[in-house]
Structure formats: structure tokens, C-alpha cells
Amino acid sequence: MRVLLFGATGMLGQGVLRECLLAPDVESVLAVGRSPLRERHGKLRELLAPDLFDLAPHASELSGYTACFFCLGVSSAGMSEAEYRHLTLDLTLSVADLVARQNPGLTFVYVSGAGTDSTGRGRSMWARVKGETENALLRLPFKRAYLFRPGYIQPLHGATSRTRSYRLAYAVLAPLYPLSRRLFPRLVTTTELVGRAMLAAARKGAPGPVLETPGINALAG
Image 1 (cartoon, rainbow, N blue to C red):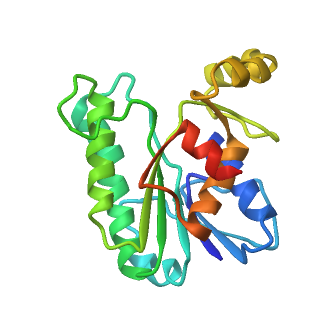
Image 2: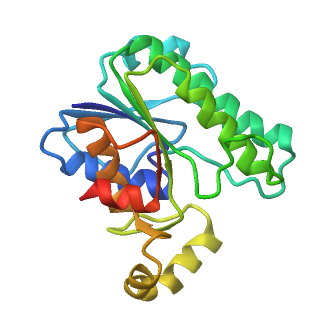
Image 3: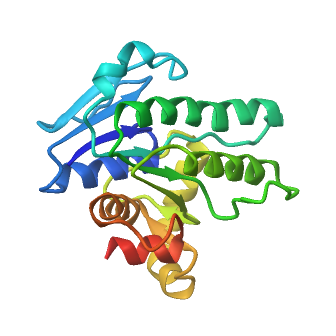
């Protein structure tokens, strides 16, 4: 398996990258992003692209892959709907369209979020935009496309958020994770489980295109 990974510098992307590098059947990983990684590994290559809206010059480097794991995302806090739509829907589809054209047999896994509104009629701006993004991805000519909607994600194995307030929150909540997992199994997952579920979806598929937290955890095994 050859994997394209977007968002490897983020908390979830770090966890997904770890699982990819540990997987015996993953031959190589190409991490595409604006910033260099600290990780070094024999399976790992990086493609630094300052403008992710314009990956056409790198099209040949984005060919020949089995799966694409899209872990990029921004918070909608303080953004207008137009700004959030540009950085969420427009960016995702710009990348996904090129990846689909270059890899006709590829499985695409997109990280959305719990509460995403696929009807496009809800009051929550971010949920509507995420829903529109999901719907548009399902129309692209991928072999398979999966939309992951995790709730709370506990970072494991050194994965850290780039946002200081989030890092502090995760540090405080980490000791409570085992209890939270028992009390709220439908709401809680980890970076490890999400990464393993993505790989499982690429290997053997999933029960349906949309996976909430319970489905993600079950697919991870």
C-alpha cells in the first residue's frame, strides 16, 4: 500500500502517520503539506507545497497511490462563512479532484467531525460546510470514499496539537481518558484508533461511507 497523507503536522495527522509507518503492508507514505516534519523514517517522503490550492505542478508526484488520508482542517472560530468555506470545502475539493484524476483506483478518507450536517440546511455554519464537503467528495470518481466523523480524539504516543490551549486541555483530560472511554464509548476515540481505522478502510473497505466514532473504533479492531 502506498499512502498520501495531508495534514501530517497536525495532532491527528501525527497519529495517522505513526500507524502508517508501523503497518507492515504500507510500502511508502508521501506527506504533503506546507511545513516540514520532524519525523524521519525509511518509508516516509515529504512534499512541501506552500500553496495547497495549486498542486498541479506536483501532479506526477501525486500519482500511483493506493489511499489518501486527508487530515487537514481549521477551526471555524472567528471566521466568516466565506472564509471557512474557502479553507474547508474549496481546499479539500481542489486537492481531492487532482488526487482522483491521478489515482483512479484510490481510496480517499476524509476527516470531518461529529455533528456534520449532510443536509446543508442546519443552523451550524461549520456543520453545513463540512456536510457540503462530504457530499461533494462522494461524487468524485474514487474507488471508494469514506467520511470519518470522530467526536473527542485523545492524542496518544506523543501526538500534540499545535494550538497551546488545546495542548493544555488534552494534558488535563488525558488521565480521565480510560474512564471517558468506558462511560462514553460512542463519543471517544484516539489518534491510534483513527489511524488504524483509516488503514483498515483502505485495505478492506468499511460498512458504509460515513463512520461516526463507534464505527471508527470498530473498524480499527
